[in-house]
Length: 270
Image 1 (spheres, one colour):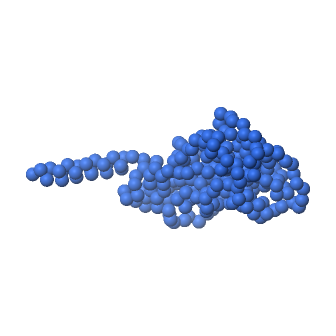
Image 2 (cartoon, rainbow, N blue to C red; image 1 turned 45 degrees about the vertical axis):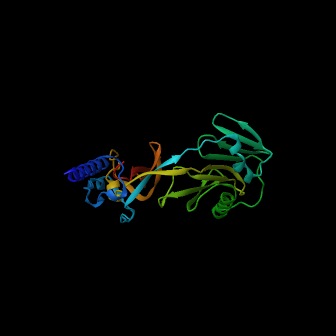
Image 3 (cartoon, rainbow, N blue to C red; image 1 turned 90 degrees about the vertical axis):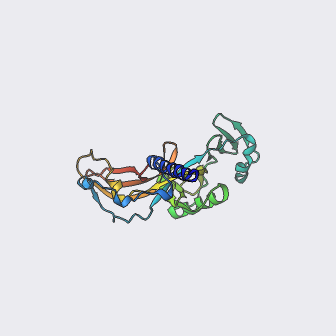
């Protein structure tokens, strides 16, 4: 009698726990939902032309990550400063960051966020103009030598005025982390003049189903006139509501030629 009571009570607790989990926005991996059964509003085709090949949903589930914020004091600075050969730098304390200054170089190390910023104001060292391949190689060598980092990462190279900007995005759960990248800016001759580098650790909060590309398309805005030509999309992590979540980012072009860019959250429950 007592044993059956315990069994009955245990079963009731399990049912209540399952109901509670299913009602929350994030569910564990073993209680995933079948995204293939979700009904999709196909009227998005009246507002969007799709120029890319519709892929299969290869990533079934995604994780929500929380950045782990560190607190730094003066005694923690040298392990960051040492690779920059700024051991004789003067360190000035500010409310939000420490600033090391020496010979035209400035290194800011933030107190409450895992971010460092570097500036080199020593002036241009003239030489041959570099191309995007050379800019990438110089930036990768700087990253490997001076910055705490984790591979793998995705690399993109672009222009900002006459300067080159090389952007590194690390990976979380096999997806690019677009929220907290590293950006290295070089002048036209390959001299590094600015660096912004995030180096967070992350804590996994939970896992949920990833919606299909078609389901994400159905959530795009429809208030514009005429059709938007969607040329491509990326699945990546972005920072929303203090956490990192997977999103679909769509890129395209309005009929007038203006650029279109829009994000849709990729998790079914979040």
